[in-house]
Length: 141
Image (cartoon, rainbow, N blue to C red; front, side, top):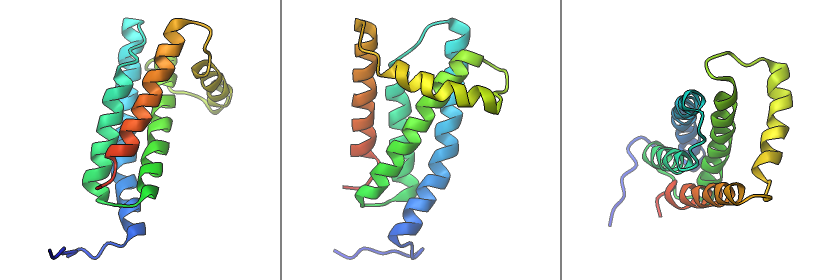
């Protein structure tokens, strides 16, 4: 079986191309989900699954990489997108300031790791499953 690489992309170029296409799409989707959650005042943990599928399929389509590093980059984009979902869930349509983001990021990470209640555990399990989705579906296997 012959494989043709007409655009002559190497592994590093594939990961860079996948990142440049996936990061804006993932952040835009995260912002929309965050604003939606802000206005309905409910946290939709299942939206992380949708975000995971969007990021994984976009990275697979535009990155077309077979390396594990592509999956790691896609997971990093997914985690950044989760932070954006939570940020825009809190602030809505207002623009964040740098001071607010500096205080916000550690609070959200600590809040995500909270296992004191059943909804928090379910939310953490959904995030772990979403990371698994991104890892398995973001590269060509």
